[in-house]
Image (cartoon, rainbow, N blue to C red):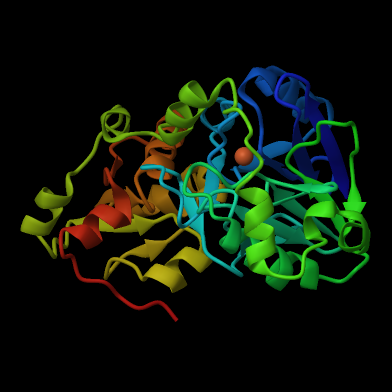
Amino acid sequence: MIFRQLFDKTSSTYTYLLASRSGGEALLVDPVLEQTGRYLKLLEELDLKLVKVIDTHIHADHVSAMGKLRDATRCVTVMGEQSPTDVVSMRVSDNEKLTIEGLSLTALHTPGHTSESYSFLMDDRVFTGDTLLIRGTGRTDFQNGDPYDQYHSLFERLLKLPENTFVYPGHDYKGDTVSTIAEEKAFNPRLNVSSADEYAEIMNNLNLPNPKLMDVAVPENLRLGLQLDAQHRVPSIEVEELMEAWPDPQVQLVDIREDNERKRDGAIPGSIHLSYGRFASHCAATGTLRSLSKNADLLIYCAVGERSTLAVEIANEHGLKGLAHLPGGFRAWKAAGGEVDVIE
Ligand SMILES: [Fe+2]
C-alpha cells in the first residue's frame, strides 16, 4: 500500500494520500487548496491516478482543494450525506463502503465537531477528521457542532474500534502524527470524563477564538461543486424536457453513479449502468457508448450533474460527440417527481 501523511503548516492540517499500488488509483483525504500543486506533483512522481477526494467535513480553517483537484484530474469529490454543500459529486452514508482500486474505506458518521463530520476506517487505521485529535477533540462551538453528539461519536463509535487501530487526525498543532485508540482512551484528557454532561461542560467552556479564515473558508467550501451554470458548459437536456417526452425511445439514459449509490437511491427506469471510473474506455472505438450512440441519443446522468458534466467532456476528448447530460442529475429527476426503479 502507498500511504502518505502530508502537512499544511499554515492550518496545521494533515492530508492523506492512499493507493494500493504504484500505477493505480489514488484517494486524498482533506486536501488543502494551497498544497494542490504539491499533491499533483506527488501523484505524478508515484505514478498514481487520483480518482476520489474526500473532505471529512466542511472546514472552517482552510479552503479545501477538492474543487481544484476535480478540475485538474476529474476525480470524484466525496462527502457525507449530511453535508450542507449544494453540489458534492458523491455522498456517502453511515457505514457505507467507499472504494478505489484495491482499497475500501468504511464511512462512519461521527457528528459533533460539525453535524456532517465523518471518519473513515480502513483496516488498521481510522481517519478521524476533527472528531478525535491526538490528546484532544475538535471544538463543537460552531457549524452545528454539538458536544453531546461528539460524546456519542467518540464513546459509542470511535473508542469502540479495536484498541490497536491507528488514529490519523485531521490536524495536529504540536507535531504529533499518529496515535492509537488505546493511547487516546488512556491519555486523552478530554476523554477522561464520566458522562456526556461532563464532556459538554468542558467543551462549552473552551472559549476559543474563531479560526482566522472562518469567514472565507466556510462559504468557499460550501460552493466547491459544479453549480448548475457550470454544468451547462456541455450539451444538456433539462429534467423538465426529459419528463415531457418520457419515455422517449430515442433517448438512452446512462447512469454513471456507483453500485452503492444506485442500490441506496434507485435509478431512472430504462437506464443502463456504466462506471464513471472507466468512462474513457466506454468511449473508445470498441467501447459500449460508441456502439450505443449509433442507435440512440445518449443522455448521461449521475447524482447531481458534476460527474456527468466531466463525462461529456471526456467523451468529447475521445471524439465521441453528441452526448448530453442531465443537469442536477438524479436528484433533480427525483425532485421533479420522476419514476424511480429500485436496484437490487
Ligand atoms: Fe474542522
